[in-house]
Image (tube, rainbow over all chains, first blue to last red; front, side):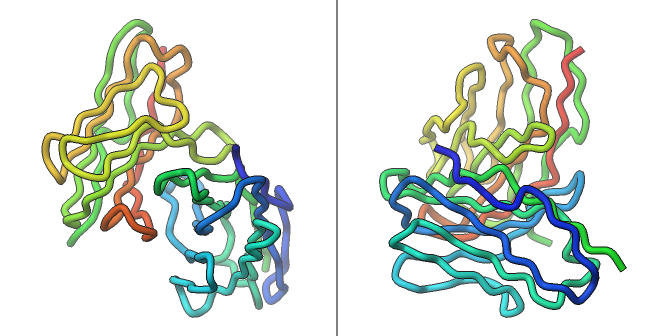
Length: 111
Length: 113
């Protein structure tokens, strides 16, 4: 089952902060975050694993609540380059390394 | 430079025709994936392969077929059995079957006329 992302869309001014949430009904082993700009391929941001390990960029922060099967991506001091659609991909314990992606959150940063 | 290439970038097909989308990677990755993306929606997994000569169905495999005869190549065939094939198709790879980032190709936009 597809994870649910919220909000579906958000508009920010440069310098403002945003939080994007991802929620699953399945027991998760990991959560992946990607950003996609219009017409382009998704680009990796971060992986959060059960147990607290994280792999990703230093300037991106995220959390993974294993009990609630929820993850949040924190975008602070947003820049124009942050604009795009953010997707979470969840890996359930019974998924065999398969990712199931959410519907995406569209982020627009304005000057 | 290492990366993933997909060809063609745009593809037009008549109804009832099979078409094959190319995906090549020179990253020496074991795992490869095919996703479908419809406008305004997320990515849905069609097929994935974790090793040469082996592949598994994803969530929406009906009407698609794949092969993995070489480590660097994972072509996707969209058959006439796929009822609504117009979409953006993305190929990805990761270093192995563990929990690793996926690297995506530039995509192929398929339109059925």
